Length: 374
Ligand code: AMP
Ligand code: GLY
Image (cartoon, rainbow, N blue to C red):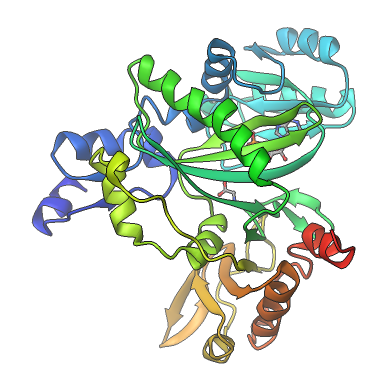
């Protein structure tokens, strides 16, 4: 990477996924004098280690679920008995979204613990965190920071489960919309002052300033917003819907983060429209996705005004085919979630891809609220 960036005289690197951040790619680029958007290895522990984040919250009084760190089945069993069901069991390290079990029964929780300590997740499962179950609606909130200045970015709501009505196994995300109206300006302000600001200050005070985007997963509980988790990157497919609304120059914002100049930058401006994206995934996802399925109609879908982002596609003899789990993101804007949803599905229906599937209910919570006139 360093050689490539030097040879091509790259002026800004945006590190997309979490693994290279946790491995220290941003540090290496920074040391070579290449502007980079993304946190250091030390600060990326926010996503790389659940225990790190829970301890940081404890030190800085950041609201989050009560927790216990455990390193073997015996300790875990004791902790589970303390919390009782429902309870949440998490492998400490990166597990591509598969390391978390929200257990409704003690038997499920016990099975999750045994799975983690069986070595299934490798080093990521050397430790686990047992957490109090938080009740409420979940939303995502994003903020840009250069380690000191923080600019609120946007909110979104993801649909993690593979099946309609939020059923079935977890995925990387089957669709999303932005903004997440459930995160009202008041709640957003609380998330900023009670969660994000003390996180940024805490990390800076402890000598590991965070530079990049903070992706906050937040539960709106009766006690107020509480941290579920941090990611150290833009989410997929949250990124697609937020950028469809962004009116400011993205490069200017990211470069200002990279160069520690955020205090001198105008806050990002967004369209008040809603953007909604539907993921087309390959049959078999999130297990083993079927590769090679044919895809036609992308141009027709885009002719409606929708945008089709490619994720897992390839060209086979010049024709577009599926080449991964999540294959396409069909994204549209509208004055309401209901309108954006209708436009996105109208575009989806023009895509002919017999080996792809999608959820038909992306945005359902908000569509129901809009129908009820809330
Ligand atoms: P995480 O990887 O920590 O975001 O966990 C994955 C998903 O599990 C989250 O998006 C939540 O839906 C759920 N989850 C995680 N922690 C909790 C908790 N303490 N209470 C309830 N649900 C949780
Ligand atoms: N869509 C959730 C994520 O990117 O982590």
